[in-house]
Length: 119
Image (cartoon, rainbow, N blue to C red):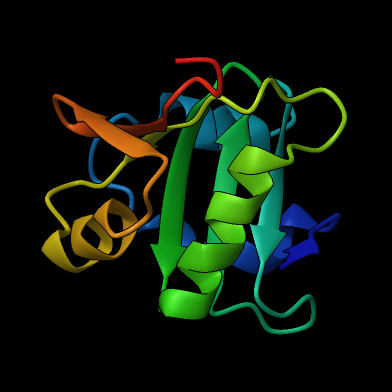
């Protein structure tokens, strides 16, 4: 998973966001803080848009490896992130199934989030 610096490279993936577009679009536009991680920094086909407060979206043609990398980021977050992630799945049963196979994940409503390490 590669941290993206030129956010324009995922413009073709943004149309997939159907609900709660505020956080990912505000990161793309540089209005709010967050990071974008991709599978390929030259021609991304999958992206994780992660706002510093915790809201996140996975876009594009992700695979199980991309989901595993996302879970690793949650467990060892980059500087500035708390490790919290409210992942909006937008009724994507394939994504939900892949994430729920990860032992440190729990569900709350339409969001998937990492359990606290001390609980």
